[in-house]
Image 1 (cartoon, rainbow, N blue to C red):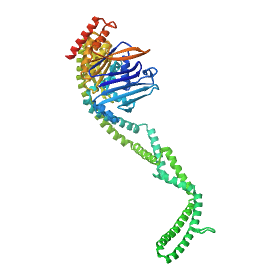
Image 2 (image 1 turned 60 degrees about the horizontal axis):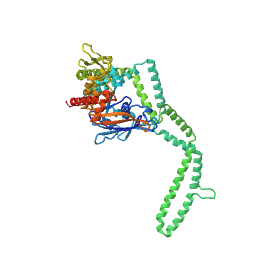
Image 3 (image 1 turned 180 degrees about the vertical axis):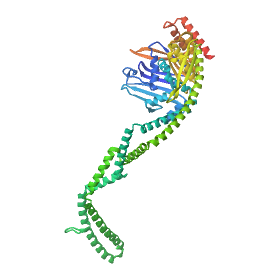
Image 4 (image 1 turned 90 degrees about the vertical axis):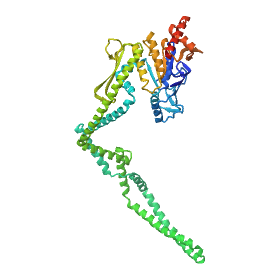
Length: 564
């Protein structure tokens, strides 16, 4: 349920704070007062599209906040899926701001969300129905979606199974098209795959090989410097140089002196043993370093071989992937595709078998769906017909026809269309043939009054759908809205006193000039001011005592009907 709507800097609305309640909330006002702006603000905060004209003149940003309370289980699943925390009291605060740059920011319970997520959430909160919505009702392609909303859980399991088999068949057909396509194209693909596999296989790539080769390249690219450093180092360590003894020779002299010292003081023996070990290690290290230098001389052609190997790896990476691992993965997948094409006849036979099984399952599931839809169509059609009778269409007949098509679609093989006969003696005709706006308004309201038990949506918004009705019929439409308001929160913008008189909560929208600027204001009305507004709707701006008395009588009469 929508509890609060706060609007700031939206077109003619400088700032407005509206507290809504359960039941029938009626909004009235003169033409051009800004009724559509209030609804537009609500649609904006729920993800609707707007232009920069939505922003109040000379302001940098327009903000709308909507506070909802809801126990919609599906909505809670959506919130959890997107990581939005649910308040303990089941309230949901939606805030959307439009900036003068044309960009907007959406937040739900403090979490920033995309416009797509916001619209997904909004779809579980409010159902808006206005005159422009007639088009969806007149479009037979939309009727199956409406019927499926009535079917709800009864259809859910079958529809999920059908979607699974439908997608399965579609994927199989794609594979068959690949197998059974043009023979020349198939041969060309086989040749390409064989070439790619052979090129990669011939290279005998190894994971981690590139890193090792780069390290070797780095070493061999510095070969001359390494050889010079080795020669000098070995000479200093072991061979010695002219006029300068090697470290090894110096170590020998040190050990000789230490040996003499040990003879004089035996406590130096451990030190002598340690240095003797170092002396041996020096010799071993010198020999190892020398062998390293000899190895560098033997690697004269290795650098060129490494360069060639790296070029091979780079070439394959450019063609088949950004790393050796990706190239090997490409080769593996190419082999799978090749096997698939080479063994196409056997594979095609197996796929045809799988396709027949999927189609059989689709047919069986679609048959179950048709049965569910037809049963619900009869039930719902009768309920809508009863609702139309209650709104001064006593002779109306309404039915929902479900016919099987020759082809399968994403929602089965059923064609669903609404048919109506508005007057006695007339044949049932497609709903799209109805010309009367008043009849369309009542059909819409009848649909909503029946749909209320099939949906978890708490709030219905009706934007002047009373177009084309008046007098006694308008009163019946108002009664139906009031009854609907006992199960759901209803927000209704109307210009008819018969409907306004049924209000549980009444708001007046008016336009004022404040400090040279035009502003739209919204005022909640008490009983007395509500009667005054109803009188205005009945008689225009000049509200006489007689008109006011008639308004009070109408209000009293409507309230007594509401209590029955």
